[in-house]
Image (cartoon, rainbow, N blue to C red; front, side, top):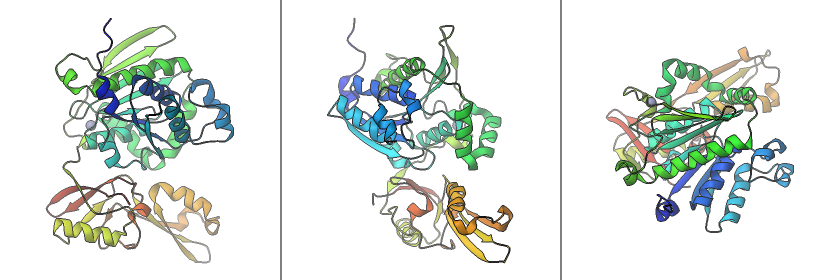
Length: 378
Ligand SMILES: [Zn+2]
């Protein structure tokens, strides 16, 4: 038997991002290390819990007792498997906390998430960055794997207009959908995670062998969906190839230029640097992940408080602020800012406070067109 159709040197130098370190993520990470991948970015916002242990090879009871972050635990275990491993971790939400610049450095992204919203966010980042991604999903004894390649097929296009509309309606409360979707999914087993996680890694490794793929020496799952039914032991492959030329979700952000703006810069400083770069005062920063909001809370005695935060944090901030307890929602007047220019009222806020993650790419609009700039590290 042939040793492998894969090149060990390509695998060793590949950079792979794994989004989600649950049951599927554990299997995918373990297989990546066994196959010889040495550069991994792991993304997850959660801590290890007892319920994870029956289907997660990398977690122990001690991790659950200590409620350790999943990303910290997997990084430690992967290095224990191969001391040459380099693991970067992002403890956060794929929707908001992963900079596009980080995705641009990857060869492939593997999605091990359990909601349509998270898949939609991975797809948007990958399409903007021009990076292929492999999706996996498990539910009960069933599982699916899909491959998406910029220019070929797109998750959002496959959702169709109705699916997208449905998602758009839910977007502001993604945390709530996430909880609902998790509650609604059937408990799964380590076996289905093993099957789907293995397929995902196999497909991801194919994607880093671009020449072999283009020459037809490897066959990818790109444009198709593998469906596995463990109960009746059947698999089938269906088309999943939709790609609508008018879809804004898969628009590539190109070219991306480096710039001297940092997440620690104030809005005023960032606009000044961008103006200098683009040689125009007419510079607008477009917030494409999340809006920035200010709320004016008015109590019965007409006392007013202003609450400012990225849109996603509103619920949390108003719940935490004791002075807002008992203020009816109707007493909160909200402004949403999706564009930041010299008329933005909070020029002293930093870009990090606006909600932009490290390594992010700024979408800058001027009268002459749109530009993309990757931020420097702080
Ligand atoms: Zn699309």
